[in-house]
Image (cartoon, rainbow, N blue to C red):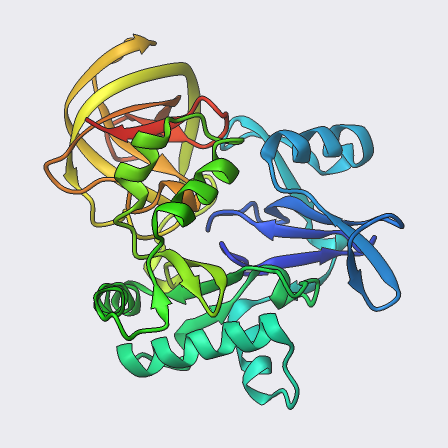
Length: 336
């Protein structure tokens, strides 16, 4: 199974997981639990009700209490991850296929219509192939409500940069129905995100007010996730070994933001100063598998970041360190 960021998988016991990252063990998929069958749940699919889990803390707590079989001490990433065995997966939901179904569906509800209309505008304005676009989230698996957000996927480096440039143009066009967040929208987003990432409102606004990956359309929030094509991914499971080295808080200059648009995102660094935590010499990059850290900093900007320090070991290449963001609420990256 070739699974990647933005896909959802459905287990034989009717649990939905959202796939994380682009590198997976040969017989399992790294994916976090998202929707579980629950008679008291607020989501409906057929004759079943479901509950949604968002924060990482609640997801891990749920896994430990009810589904410990999915918790794996991964020998490559050297951490405990939620991994679903291939034999336990009964359906692989892929965003490109989900969008194609919306395009051929006769009757669309409010969330489906908003998702499709957004993509029709984006596809036309950016002049990109439909095959490189997708719809994710609850709409993909038909577990949405009228109030559900618009979760979209853009595949490939070339397509991604074309869409990003188009989004800048649309935001600048006052007649466009695709809008950037105003102050109230940013405050609402901050209130939601700050439960899982501890930063000040001022620091949040400084980074997120200039992002093109989120905003509003037809009265709904939207988020665009940019993901590489499979032929653009060189890493294989086990080709790099990741070893945790504690935590660190650093100050550094961003020298290459080329990969900041995509999930996982990365920022190459220079002039690194370790302010707190484990002391090492060659921290080369900041990385995150969480979309909230995409587009966070640009070339030449100075950032302060705190996260998990990892040593990367790859045969034939020199060992180096990275700062991984997103596993704890204290993880952050702010502009200086």
